[in-house]
Length: 276
Image (cartoon, rainbow, N blue to C red; front, side):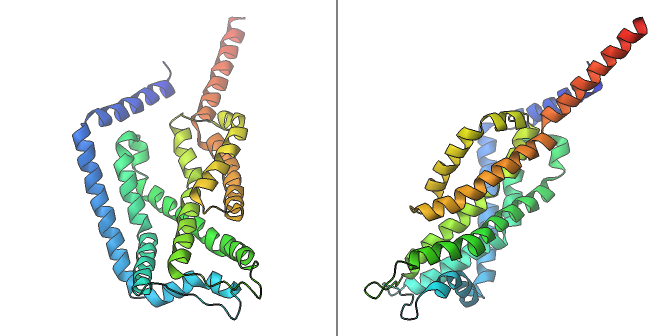
């Protein structure tokens, strides 16, 4: 057994021993503990963001307000609708504000299944996860929102004037923000699957056509039921999938194995030459 193989065996034993050390009840208790901390972090973020609720509300509405005709305006059909919309905007902003800590708790929950060498990087991984999440939401806000809203408002004419309600717009916008935020986690997700040897760049390339189909289905599920939003999500997802192939190639186990196989071949050639 080579030194690299022994190291892998030790790492696998560490992972299995850490998993065996927790019972199913202990996993549930750990999940409850992490969820409690996530809720507290989101609540603290909500309280902070509520102080700026008018500004945050204005920022969220800005992409639609810019494309609305002069005669149109936002409306609310229920008396408490505007108040609850302010609360919801503050909560969503609070989740994004607390996202580094939230992702830290998520990675802490899955850490028993990680190598000891990987557990040391949980804090950087949590910040990277939050960064991808926020970047995805910003992509939706600055790129998808203007294009999508301009398309929808373009159907207005003298007979039809858009007057979207706060509730419908908030639901539509937040669903897109979270959908793009989650979608942009794909390269990081593939990174860990490749590190664990579950996927490889070769398998990802081979399954590309199925992945594209799944991406379009996921875009249809994650976004509102309109073709524009689905296309605007599936396009970046396909690019992220291609990026994930390179991530798996550079950091995946198959690269290490290829290096080992190449080294073993070289050692065998040297032995054969010495025998001659």
